Image 1 (cartoon, rainbow, N blue to C red):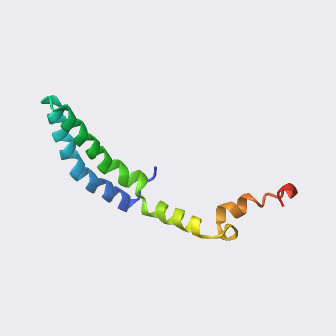
Image 2: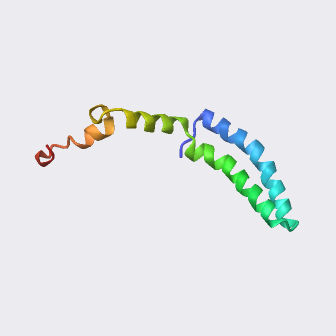
Length: 89
């Protein structure tokens, strides 16, 4: 995964909030509060993972446009069907 400048800034901002929460979660786990510690650890991990892998605005926009455009205007499907095979025509 190649991160640009804005992606790195976003990751740093996520880590600023997620690392103290993860630290508190580990303290709660070591104190014996398993449910609270595990839950907070999951939340801290989700704060970092969700924006990086699932909530990428560019990927959401490309998927939306790909679903709205007809097949002839899509770049990837039009190229895949034009490989010169007469059986597909």
